[in-house]
Picture 1 (cartoon, rainbow, N blue to C red):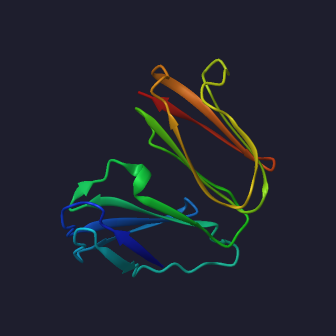
Picture 2: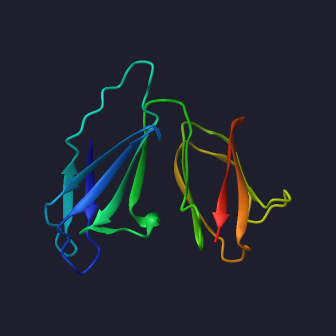
Amino acid sequence: MGVELLNTGNNTIEQIELVADLNSEFKFQEVTNQPVYRRGVLGYQFSSSFIQATSNKVNFVCVRIASVNGIQDSDLSNNSSCEKGFNENIYLNIFPNPVSQFLNLEYVLPDRGELRIKIYNQMGQPVLKQVSAFMEEGIYKIQYNTSGLSPGLYHYEFVFKGTKRSGTFVKQ
């Protein structure tokens, strides 16, 4: 698996730590010490391998930058990329948790269908813009501004073609 890394900053990057995630079940991490100069691009090929069993298909692969020059990247919205795999499952990633301002939802839809996303408080009342739409297959990212929410526990519900994923996040 390969990735293309772009240095949009003004400093030379001397070390990048990458994490690849397959189906949110298997992760592997690698470090490259190849320099990426200002405005430069680096093609990187992961040396780790994954043998796919016939009963365990790869639905999606996400690669993110964990750190640059030994410093953890705090802006998770601009340092990851997901690609659809070879299966019919849904990928959903909600981060950061806890959240202070922006909540990111990344999801991969394996085909066309109706999608509903609800975010609500402990009383079951919707608190952020709800999504209800017919969507094409693909990779999507939504960013919610949570600055208007009071600190506390919130819930999300993600339903695609009858498959429901739900969970909670904390607003700081």
